[in-house]
Image 1: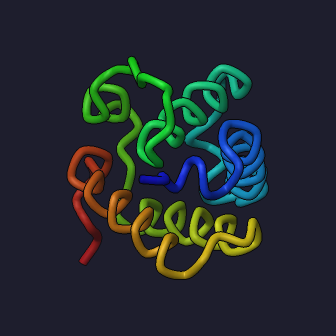
Image 2: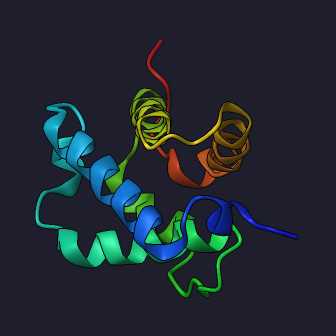
Length: 122
């Protein structure tokens, strides 16, 4: 059975998608502060491995627990959805089919409770 990783060209394609995704995030004035002082090359490599893994690629993701890795950032629900929207936009621009985007975005939605740590504003 073919994976999404194979379908879209493997590591090189996933790496380009992740790179373009982080360019969009860093261009966003609301999201950029989350990445102040972060080694972006390292983060992009790490995120590429993570994306390869969730798309069924041969990479074994060995990163920290999502909740532990993001707890100090106080990520808001609003910013979580802003990042998710940028990912969806990046996947569309890369030519990923709608059904496959839906699959990826469902996986992303499943991480929300581990990433969002700030209470929503009323």
